[in-house]
Length: 177
Length: 202
Image 1 (tube, chains in turn red, cyan):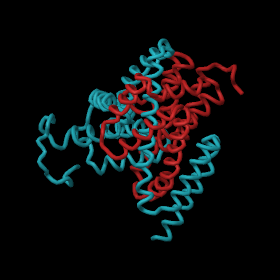
Image 2 (spheres, helix red, strand yellow; image 1 turned 90 degrees about the vertical axis):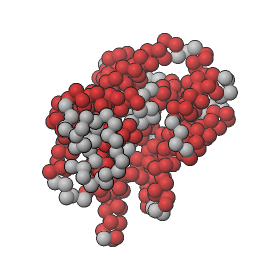
Image 3 (cartoon, chains in turn brown, purple; image 1 turned 90 degrees about the horizontal axis):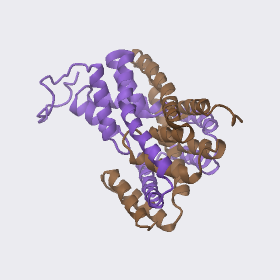
Image 4 (cartoon, helix red, strand yellow; image 1 turned 60 degrees about the horizontal axis):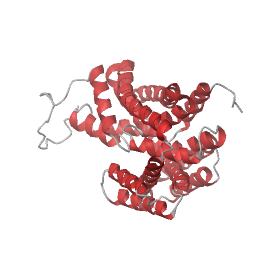
């Protein structure tokens, strides 16, 4: 649609809108990021998207920084900054005003009802993220096995996730996956 | 303030002397959020709780939970919302900006450097293999987070919640429908159902 528009403006618009729809946080918005970045805008391939997700998990900081990486691949450092601010800004402003409003009228029970209602939605979205990323990342049976073992270990133990990522990287380097 | 927490053996590690600490200044907000953020691999929430509640005692555990619940029900990255709400509660808009800059600024620098390295060396075979392995494990971590979040619904036998969850999963994950359209249908339906259910319980 707006493929010949300025990429920076497209980034700002895309992530600014996504910011307000990202119920359940950044990881729940991954299907939408994948749809827009790979299928709609053709900013990156499926494989590059999986790589970008891996890098964002490897680096410290909030999960939302996957948009920094997408922005960089579209328009360099400026793209990285614009994508990050667009994804964080609108919702941050909203959060500021809603929290001021709620501290003034704290007796309302609507926040609790809305929150309870949105929980299944955000889990469903995160599940969809998991499926889409598994389809792009797990190209071999060994890869799918690594995913399954990492999921089981992270679910059942309190192991620092960093070690699981490191183990995955080592297995990949060894050519197992 | 926080007298509701029982006086357990708290040796007060690096707090000067005041247990009910003074409201943080702008620089303190920036530094505290930068530290939490840079410590947080795979999510900052755990570190935010540790920093805000245990280490600095800027909030009680209950205050923190309430603030986080608010930020969770708003759209957007939860921890980013938390930084803004938290900072502005103490120091107004400048405080919100300071906490936000601390949370996002330093890791953005790290990630941008990684992005530049990936753009230059991403096609090297060894790096490709490493990243392929890391992404397999990272997907596993995400799936485990999904299962953890599902457990309360399963334990409560929350059938309606699980049906909504499955419907959203199918719409977005399998049918690949656009997120805004799915949410515009699913959120009102889900809110209406949980409103009715609550009224029947009450």
